Amino acid sequence: MTDFRLHSVLRPLTSVAMDGPGTLPRWSASALSTYERCGERYRRRYVERERGPGSVPMAVGTAVHRAAALDNGARLALDQRAKLGELVDVAVAAYDEALDRDRVEAPAPERGEGRDGAAAGARGWGAHVSPSLPRPLACEERIEADLAGVRLVGVLDYVTPGPAGDVVGDLKTGRAPAAGAAARSAQLTLYGILWRAKTGRWPAAVALDHLRPPSAKRRAATWQHERQASPRGPGDYAAVVARIGQVQAAVAAGVFLPAGEHEFTCAPRWCEFWPTCRYVAPARRALSAREE
Ligand code: SF4
Image (cartoon, rainbow, N blue to C red; front, side, top):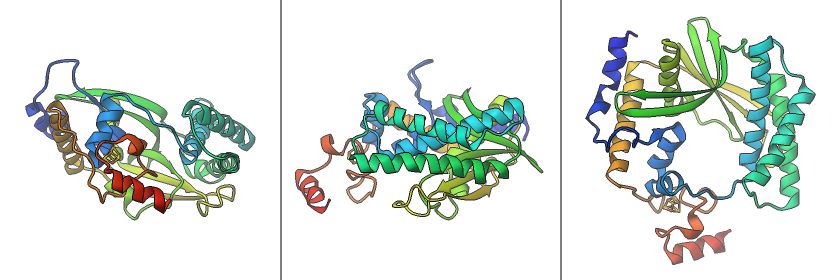
């Protein structure tokens, strides 16, 4: 795609009302998806800067990502894979660190099971995912881009060479992948724009590497790997940019709609602000407590 086409993709954002330079939010994929699921949750996280406690599954995910980053870094710098023992050690240390840092409240058996899961996930990366990928071109690459009235940011897990060009990859841990997850991922589309901003090259494809235990109750068992790849084109980039433009305009106008009452993520299991959210009626909170 030429520069002219890149500008065509980004042009819609120039019409978004702004307060002036330096006042725009920086849009990451998680900020965008948080707003789209619940404007109030976005407001508390990204405007008020409130942080709720983490969870054991989140700490496991952090740990496995840390192991993958170690391995990708070794391959990038030295063309050598990290040893399985090193990956496990790094993952377990990262898991314990995340439990403390994110104030995770969980009983000791669950914490221990999570630690075993972090080790199993790190082994899964080393045994299944890493050997399936070519030597990366980049890993843990933080890229910021200020483009036509919107500020984007993202940390790309890894980018690898493919037969038709660069492939932007992202690691997902924990749950079975939904069909078409890579094709629908706005996160990967955003990463494609960032990669283009940094290198001048559009990726040939984007991909999700799903790594997970056989079930949520067997985190310590051998983890399974499944890759989903998907192409991206100008229409995909234009669509995500248009969505960011509208969300940015809503934030600039102070519009933070709460999630609908039937939205599954508006629940104590999924939202850290549930206990204190002014949009949750007492009767609904009581009902949820009885169902737990
Ligand atoms: S409890 Fe529901 S409405 Fe409140 S912030 Fe969370 S998701 Fe949004």
